[in-house]
Image (cartoon, rainbow, N blue to C red; front, side, top):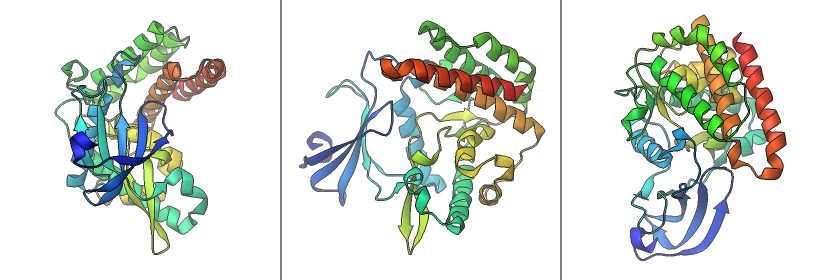
Amino acid sequence: MHTHLGDVKAIEITELNEGLFNALYSLLSSKPVLELEEIILKLGVQDGKHILHYEKEIQKTELYVYRLLPGIGVPAPKILYADSSHTLINCDYFFMEKLTGDTWEHLKAHITPENEADLQRELGEYTAKLHSVKGDYFGYIKEDESYHYPSWREAFHAFIDRMVEDGIRDGVKLPYDAVYAALAPCWHLLDEVKTPSLVNFDMWSKNILLKKENGIYHIDGIIDHERAFYGDPVAEFISSQTICGKIEDAIYFREGYEKVHPFVFGENEKIRLKMYWVYVALLIGVEIYRYELEDREETMRRHSDMLLQALEALK
């Protein structure tokens, strides 16, 4: 803190351990930093640690998105300082504003049905604003241009290929041949996606912070953009459905989305969404390395079942 933020120090440090990938700390400052008494420190993965292909330089992706959000009207915490030099510690890290609200996940039992409808409209509008950002390539947002592709079909095929490669490398036993067999009749549908749109791909209730004003909750910030890519906006609805239910029936979400963009979700979009669910299920299975050994066998069984269900849904 002293090096980057001036003559201050942390007088209280609280570890926030919601996630499985990064280390996150709440720091109470000895004096305000840009009028903030509490700030967040987020540490990336240390040099040499085991990661998957798509997790390479993942914190730079998150910072890239955070810096875009103020210009498109999507609420997010302010970034105070970021360092990827690895000179003080052997990982990327950044300091950001600590928002005063709590997550949608933690607060959902306290939200009235009317407030829930309004929140889903807000989420739909912010999702559409995110999708309004267009890229020059398809694929994960990285400095390494080998992750960039001229078409969405090529980019998403590479998503699958790299995940399968990671799984085989790590000895994770999943039905990889069945994944390719299920996707084979569907690849051509990805050619319908002509323009690369910004997709968060992790916008579920634990990554949405709410704040109560005049007795009503509003979205105060959307966090954790590290898995973002330029691709098909339909892929976003994987996480949207965990909050709003089946996207074709999510009336309030769609109302908010249509304030910014037309909402198109026909038969081909339904199939593409199922393809992205296969990818999510594959990713969750392959990232088993994050879990403690005693949890791994049971977790692997659940994740294998999830992938099989996703493959069955695509038939």
